[in-house]
Image (cartoon, rainbow, N blue to C red; front, top):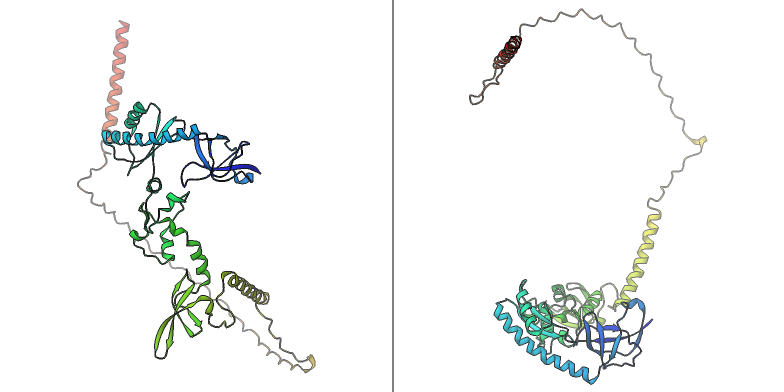
Length: 398
């Protein structure tokens, strides 16, 4: 166990755990703490509490001090400087003709650096912009590209429901949302109706998804037969939030659509069992599965029941078998006929000469006739060499 306190640095931001460092802290106090980004001013969102070590990322950063009036005044000056830096950065972006949209500017608490948040369709070469801003502010400059969801969270706004958007007010993190959630909740698949200010699927689709999944497990499907207080009918529609079903019931020669609570209906063939919550249904399904498993085990134990053996009469009462008929003697084979002399093979005539295939005109025959000419030339060269050597010897003698 470790003593921790949770601190938030921005509105609707993530909570971080810190070591209280022996200070008496409570919810709502402003503190100065050390983070990976440097020294920052944050707000305590809880009191000092014990948390298991397994749930913490050790080692914890300590709380430096409780914020004083000077710290709060420093924070206000930083907020005023952020507005001025925003206007200057807008002018410099236009001067360098960069395709980027500046969203927000943030000063570090000790003014050791300035962070500029922007959005863009692709990658932007902002090296000249950084040099220009660094020459003006004389401090470290950071430019961070963010997505459309982070942009909506920083800027805020009013959602389609008429309330401030959730990510700006209380959501600390973005959860994945899919179009499958809209289908299960029977919402319109029109993108303009299920998208938020960021042109992405609204985060509120995730809020009721767990309730829809749990309720759908115990509710019958559309098209199934069901027994109502007014008789049996076919389910035409279901309402997950109100847990009601709309049933098509035959009334005389016509049909009517009537709405019933799911607890007032029964499944066909099960008079005593009503549509109950998921826990009862799963318990009964488990019991039925156990019974089926026992029945299956009994069947597998004796897959082939033994056949009834026919009762044989005692030996004394058995009928005697008829004797086998005796086989007659085998007929004797006569002597084999002698083989006659083989007739001599006819003499083969002379083989006809092989027909040489006509060669294509484009290809030339291999140069075999030139080999003797080459050998004669070599012989002549050898003779010439010998004569030259003999002439050289004669010259040496004289």
